[in-house]
Structure formats: C-alpha cells, structure tokens
Image (tube, rainbow, N blue to C red; front, top):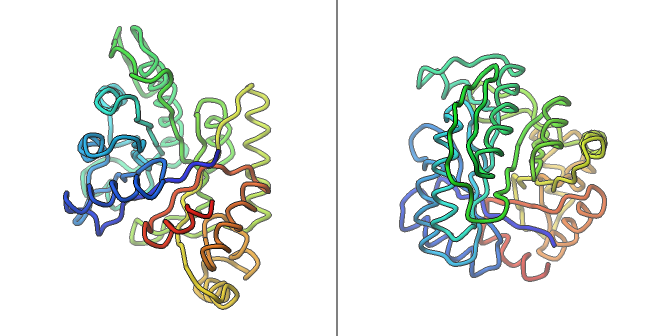
Amino acid sequence: MPVFGLHCSHEQVHPSALLAACQQAEAAGFDVVHTYDHVGPDTIPPLTPLAAIAVATGRIRLCPLVINNDFHDPVLLARDVLAIDHLSGGRMELGIGAGHSFTEYEAIGVPFEPAAVRKARLAESVELLRRLFDGGAVTHAGEHYRVDGVELGGAAQARLPILVGVNGRAALAHAAEHADVVGLTMLGRTLEDGQRHETRWEADRLDATIAHVRDAARAAGTDPELQVLVQQVVVTDDRDSVAGEMVTRGVVPTPEDALATPFLAIGTHAEIAAHLHECRERWGISYFSVRDLDAFAPVLSLL
C-alpha cells in the first residue's frame, strides 16, 4: 500500500496550529506527519513537537524529515526517538540525512566538512542507531563514534523504521543495505542561502539512480521502500502551462520532466492522483510526502 506523509510548514510553527494541522492530516487519511531539522527563526525542532503530536493523535505515524546527523549524538538521538516511540504506542520512524545547510553549521559553530566525510559519518551513525533501536547492550568503536555497553531498552514496535535521505552512489548503496526507506532527493549543489538546491529531476537520471539503488539492495538481500518529498503540489486545469513555468524558472530542463518527475505534482486532483500512480508503476516509489495539506487532501480520497 502507498504511504502518504504531510511535511509540516513554517506556517505551522505555533503549537496550536501545528497540532491542528496534524489532527486534520490524520482525519484526511495521511499516514505520517513530518517535522524538519533546521536552525533559525520560524522553525520548529525535529523531535519535541512529535511528543505532543503523539498525544494529540491516535493513528498517524511520526517522522522527522530529516534529522541532520551532524547536529545530534546518535546515542542521545536514539534515546529520544525511543522515548517518543513508547509514548506514541510504536508510531515513530526516524528520517536522517548527512546535513547540507552550511549557513546553519556556521551559525552554531559546527565544522562543515566535505560531503564524503559527512556521508561516512551518517553511514556509521545509521548502523549504530539500528543496533540501539533493536535493544541489547551496544559497544562500538568506529572512525566517528565510540559507545561502550549502552543499552536503551529497544523500541515499542517490532522494528523502528529508519529512513535515510541521501545523494551519491556510495551513500545510496549504503542506504539500500541498511535503511528501511531510502529517501530520494535528486538535489545538486546547495545554493548561496544554504537552504535551496540545484535540482536534478530529469526522468532518465531518476531511472539510473533507482536502478543503482535496486542493484545495491539485491546484492545486500534487502528491499527498502522508496520515498520522495513532493516539493510542490500545483492544482491547475492547465498542466502544460505550469510545466512551462517550471522550465522557465530553471526547476527542470524540459516540460516533459516537469510532468514526469515525482518531485512535482501538477494538474487537477484526478491528474495528480494518476501521476502518482504512474510514478509508482515506473519507479516503484510507494512513499510520497507533501507540504500542502489543503491541496493534497482531495487527492487522498481519489487514491
């Protein structure tokens, strides 16, 4: 079955607005609600709100999309994630990535090391987190982390899922082997504001990326779910016009890519539902997260 997530927006920073949006998402049929991990004005922390959401809801799952690995010690992160998992009755997931916003690193005095170093540290953290989530005493001596006999008690659910959002062949191959969900971003260079990225949403590029993930998964004997964050949901009666605008803005190179990519959802509610079905058929993507509750809720009823 496909999974649909709501990524909380900056408009939902106020606690009452955040809880109301999550309750609306649950009522609309969303499967999971996402927070995010950024430092700055008009932001929410990634984990603390999930504890309140757990109490305010009864079914919807909880997942930061994504934790910046460099901002969190894995043992302390695992402790807090496990606490929310027990508080929510086993509804917690962990989304985690290597970090990209160099402006935030500078603001809090954390060295922004090369991507290869950040991704290697993320890979080691993911393996350590998996052991901590599964229970039992954990001892680990790696390049980036040392743990001596830490035991956190394990999760409330049989297996607490880990979603890893990464780019790059080595990082994707590691995620295919060790993550329950591979978060596909298809983003390039981080732009000058430290938040936005160049996009690499060409359909043929995604074909090759997913083939690489599938090959790595087969070699490891795993079968991770594939997830995307739909960056824009545009409800319109004129798909072609909006696709042309996306090309003009430099989001994608061709209108065909704008209409094919899973990172955009353009059209009427029925056309968007059909588009996501096509993405699932072509690429095997079964976990879609969106930012716009009101625009997407009618699509859920069609799906």
